[in-house]
Image (tube, rainbow, N blue to C red; front, side, top):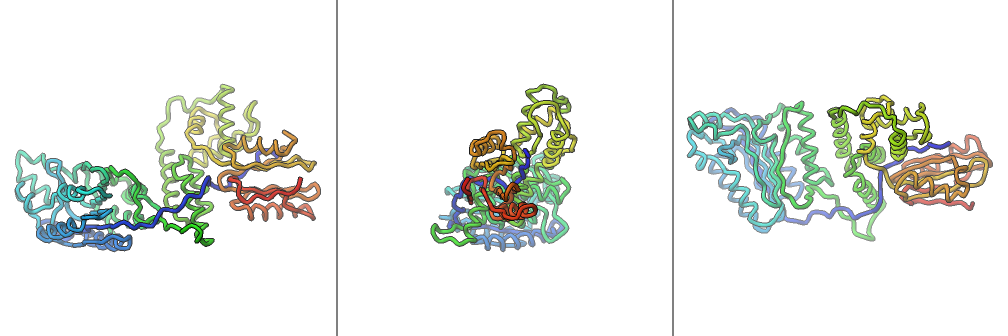
Length: 499
């Protein structure tokens, strides 16, 4: 009966407090320029800026906003924003419209910009460096979003009039150096041109709006989500880029803090979910994110979990194959390591030594399928390499039983599956005779029901469900079933009957 283990959840090692609600002072400058006088009208920037200003206001920002501004209007609005910076904890600038780079400096273009000569830059455009420099005068979190890398006829006209110095006018915007505490995000890579979009919003701003208000996402995670969304929506033609010198995490919408001793069942469930996520979020194992989604399909972090899984899928598809990856393993030590690693990832390869059998090959296929690889069932060097790269699962729990006797044992909070099974067998007291086994990891739970020689073992996401499942299975064959043992992998919800 060895190998009845079922994937039962994702890791939960502790219950840290939720992220504190934001109490800092937040100010934002939002500008969208669409109706240019000396260049074709842009469809989306005014919509983009309006929607972004509304979102930032909901997130607690004091928003200074403007649309279709001429040079005088932009200077006045920027000056008003700079006045508000004094004492602010977070400063944010969002700009949508035309921008250009000249000699490595970025400029934002008002709607009346004509830019006939290089001198016009000082009197007809806003120097981004000047704005950022004022933001960085005090120690704070500074964030700049630039949806301004569109194909720009103003830049073309300026380059034409600069003659031999036309090369100083670059395509798109220039790479920006961010000071300590500053993140500058571009709608596409430096020197490239972004798309204006066919809908209400540009691809970049649409992705930003879809993610910026999601609770519990740091600004870094927001940018990862935005980058993946834009790549999908533009078929890879546009790749958002950022330069960050942030020294800590910033959350646009942190999870609310629940006061100690004043929590409800809902608050406790939220804490558990956050703790659950904290233990899997940095993993390289896609199965942990799949396990999170199995338990919280509509959870706070469900979107991020799906992004992580997509990233692993893309990485698997794009992975270059080293020359020896297809070599079939023949070394007994490597074959044992392969089986050991499959076992620790909850795929049951059968005996850990000896010739390969169909059970081993099926375990390989199951692993390959779970990591979005072609299911070959072949024990290759490439397989072993991927097994080594895949993060481990923990903590582990196990319940074992010696069929035909009254001996059973259970264990929890072990670092590996092997340790959990060995500990449970020690508790059982009959060694290898305790051959019936269920193993479960993370927040997964197991239960063992018994009735006069009839028994059942079940794993589920919750202890109560595991007990119900074990009882239902046992009652198919027994008449006096009772729960003998139940526990979750982290040690929670233990039930122990007298041996």
